Image (cartoon, rainbow over all chains, first blue to last red; front, side, top):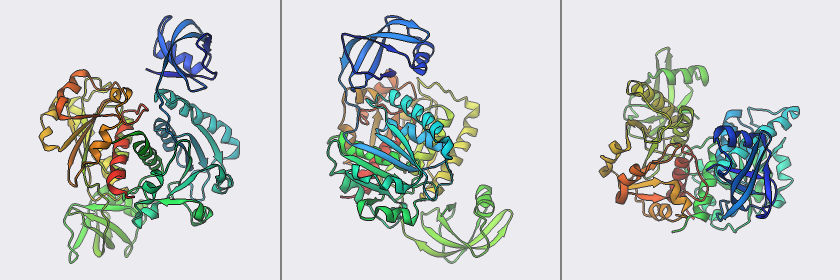
Length: 250
Length: 250
């Protein structure tokens, strides 16, 4: 069942209104819900409730809370997917899939070997578009939070803020070619809940020497297995294996 | 560096010819190679050689072997990704990414809840198109083999051949909703080299009750973490975690 986000904290004694045009369209035209139908709402404080539709208007759908649903669908770690700019359709696909797989945050970075460049004047509009894609994916995959996204003109700008992260991983193609096959597993097995992890992925052309050198001792260079993964695939590998390590048990 | 496949066994004393039109186009027009340039060739017996271009003609590129390259880029297990038919563009993305991630074989199946149906008369053409996508992805990701693909009109047809598989996993959405979080890890940790593994994924609408019932005791129902993954994302999760478990070390 599709879930929707409401940007307020849950309150079972209160009624709420859905005012997002996209959500209203989805509820009324796509799902064709009617009064008394139940839908699932995720609130700002990450509480999830089964709710009943009380009223439907063109610009507002009123709901009341029925029952709380207990499911923690968030990864215990906050994973930031930091990617060099790649072709638009591939990046949008990546945002959708990485959101399904639990990413916390996206950084789109103008890296040295990016074939794609982003004009400063177009950044705001791009970020809006990307945020919309992320929100839809978060709703469909039952996320409790909507990942954020930001643009950085260079990896240097990202590096200036690395202190907020507990771990920095660089998915480095040559590491894999040289047979590096243990860093990722060693690091992931050390993860604690709420750790903030920055994972850096190069664009189609890979990371430049000076970009790698930036991070030097601050980061682990990790191989992602012996096959070459494309720029838009590599983040999905990392997110999947973190989930496997920390959310599945044997 | 792009690799190309030659459908013969390697022989360092012999010269070979590339005759595939797509490869010739890529070598001459995209990469603009010239005589004496080196390219990498993967042979039918999975040997990989650095080769030198001896001659370039419109319908044939002749090469001689220079040096063998030792890298095993294949997963130790043979993973069959068995998917219900989904929208064409999503399936093509899936084929490309799952090939990068090491899948051995694809089964495209007309499942009960598939929104997309495939007309028998169009099957051959579709398979050709899909095979081409798989081949290109295999070349770019340095696979030693090109995964195969086949179409089955129903999951029942797949079930009739399950004896060839050592393990059968069903990625079942409701298993995850009910909190199933251990089957996948338990099973993957038991994998031996050369095991044949069938993994069944439903279409957008999920697997039907009777399709699940088909496999009953023959299969493990596995949850893929607490987030709902789309039909085209779930196989990438499974392939990534198998790689992590069997190809990375701590």
